[in-house]
Figure 1 (cartoon, rainbow, N blue to C red):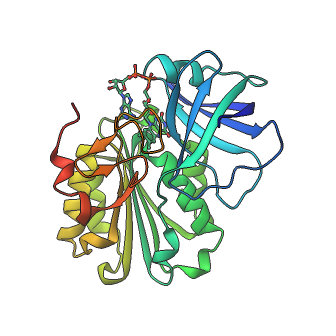
Figure 2 (tube, rainbow, N blue to C red; figure 1 turned 60 degrees about the vertical axis):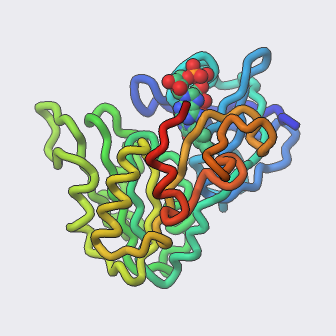
Amino acid sequence: MPRPFRVLATRAETADTTTLTMEPVDGTPLGFSAGQFTMIGSFGGSEAPISVTSSPAAGGPIEQTIRDMGGVTHALATAAPGDILTVRGPYGTGWNVTDGAGGDLVIVAGGIGLAPLRSALLEVLAARSGYRRVCLLYGARSPAEQVFRDDLARWGGGEGGVALDVTVDRADPGWPGRVGLVTNLIPGAEFDPARTLALVCGPEVMMRFVAAALTDADVPAGRIRVSLERNMKCGIGLCGHCQLRELFICTDGPVLPYDRVADLMALREL
Ligand SMILES: Cc1cc2nc3c(=O)[nH]c(=O)nc-3n(C[C@H](O)[C@H](O)[C@H](O)COP(=O)(O)OP(=O)(O)OC[C@H]3O[C@@H](n4cnc5c(N)ncnc54)[C@H](O)[C@@H]3O)c2cc1C
């Protein structure tokens, strides 16, 4: 059943992307795993699947980051403090970051794909000593399209012992950093492939190239996890909108091991 959530605060990430901080009106916290999503809607409107981006350990209000893509996401991304939205879930599989404990964690994000991975990274940072090297490789189309810039500034400044490397496809005159695809950052990331868990989220073409670069760097395909997006309606494996051959992305995914979906990722959505 959808539960009413109150919008407490909004934060503009980019020109078309907003992070909402929300709390359940009934006071019962939403328990979730990093990588899971909820179905969010506005009263009188429809629902969209949106990942949770806050820390699963936090317990209180949740954060979800929404890009204004069409009818549903426009209503959500333009919500204001005090508005009431509906939230169902959480649904789907998570990143299960603790599978990487004791070794290296390589997080590769493209654009708004950083949203579900931020939740995983916050979980790891709450238990940082349990991991060896933690790398975050982030690519955005342009400097203005980077999300979570405050977090990136903190992690880039050394907070949490995160080895952060950032690139953009197209620079502007003030950009002092790297230019090029996020795959270019993989060779310099200094992880031990034999003890690495890699988490990847971004546009599907980016995930395919990143997964190929990671396997070229000797990370086993079964230790690479990707988060797939397909059009979704119910979120609970009933309607079939998100079916990808034998998988329902809402219940079998969205997070799946690359060795299970490598061939499916070449299939276009109808
Ligand atoms: C598991 C999961 C997690 C997601 N997490 C986030 C998130 O954290 N933040 C966020 O902004 N978006 C996220 N999305 C994508 C978001 O759900 C879609 O952008 C949204 O459903 C579009 O609905 P709309 O009515 O606003 O736009 P529409 O008018 O329906 O569509 C606008 C465009 O988006 C495409 N689209 C529609 N639905 C999806 C979809 N499910 N996946 C990809 N493209 C779609 C359409 O083909 C069209 O090109 C997620 C999707 C999934 C499946």
